[in-house]
Image (cartoon, rainbow, N blue to C red; front, side, top):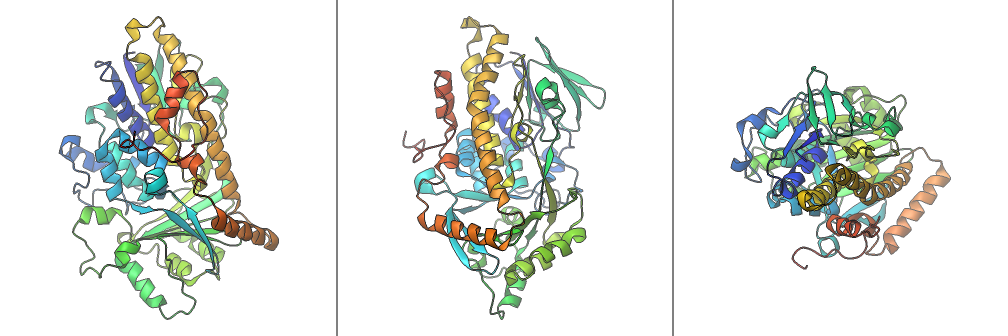
Length: 505
């Protein structure tokens, strides 16, 4: 194998590149691995190199399209909002590169539990979001752009081409051709489709052609707030007898036909107010919001990701009318000044269940959102993407590290790669998608009886939930399942038991 083309420079595409560099290049030094990204390059990338960056290196905030970017910021790192990066995903990136792990840890708020409450502020209980004792980590609450930057900035500049929008991908028994809208084209022995729900790569697989993203009827609207804005609104609310200040960094509130999540950096909230709004590590603090919120509710027709918050703000306030005062205050304080925070309107487009993730030739393989766009209710979108990436890297190393000594041809090995990848990843991701859709249904319109049943069930779950409740998501180990598949064993769909860390092995 002489060349691999990765279509898309998102979290999944960049992580796939890095795993291939780690596991394949040492065995095939002359292999060409290149990423093609439709968006323009972030401006700061041209001013630094991977060898000169520290986990918390300083970059001019005016150039970084992260916390204060808007949907109109037309670069790849400007897309997406706040997300929960789960323990299984954290372990993958930690195994990939300790510097990447250090970077995302520095830019995250780590939590072991999510607090659940109803719209009046009455607590239902706490739900596990990980934990060092069982899973090695809690969940990292992180701005997607900061997570993306951590992997993107490790990609060698000469191995990525920005502004190359794919027109179509043409499969072949001996080579794959990628054609771009600018009229150019490239050929590769293997193409990894990491171009998301609207990407063109999946259309090269006959069984997937014409299957387009589906709007699931829910919209996610959220915002980030800076320190000054957050402290001011909390001070104004102190006299309100109904005020409930969260005791957990992450609180999830369920009501009638809507959901509201809040993240407040309680550790920073307990610190004295900074005179100029800055801390010793200004770059890190710039990319960690002091407070963040997101609202999910049904909306028809679907808005676009460029819909300004001003057009939907009244709708959000209406959906949460009568909820706890903090929720109303967070919404009211958002959307006025981009330098105080940013707001996002994100309709939920989901990849339909694809019959196949690979082409018959074995030369096209789909991963991440291209193969299985997770409803955000799973908290597993980014984690599953990096699990895909690690799986691809480990399988390529096992199958192609000594191809000359093998009796199988390159074509046969590629088909074996695709077969093993599908067996390892497809059942697991489809299980997670199914679980996520159940969670998403809790955020749709409900009658009084349905709400009551939901609240009682959630209250009971929080009381009796065993320590192992999240093993299926959090305990799954990529390396273990790849080894099982290579030996002809059936890979696990769910994780099970306490995670054995690298230090314990």
